[in-house]
Image (cartoon, rainbow, N blue to C red):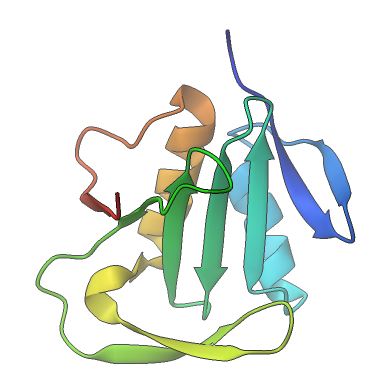
Length: 128
């Protein structure tokens, strides 16, 4: 069974299904609109979080609402970056090691939406 994914728009609203091919443009449009936190939900109940400061992004995949998840990492990256503004206004800072450059983040999201899994060359850590 293939998963379909939707973008959570808030207040329980969702977009129509978003394809893996359309996901990068949809995420870039949200960034351009100042919406730096995006949650995608799959037809199987999984969630994919994408939080960015427009240069780097936190990409986290969760199996269900109780799952601590797994997130992409940039092993060896130094320092921290701020400007990860959540939908409720909280401005977060993350270690660069726990985020990836925006281009890589978009590639990861596209691959997960297409296959359901991290790309074979992706680096990620589980919180389980």
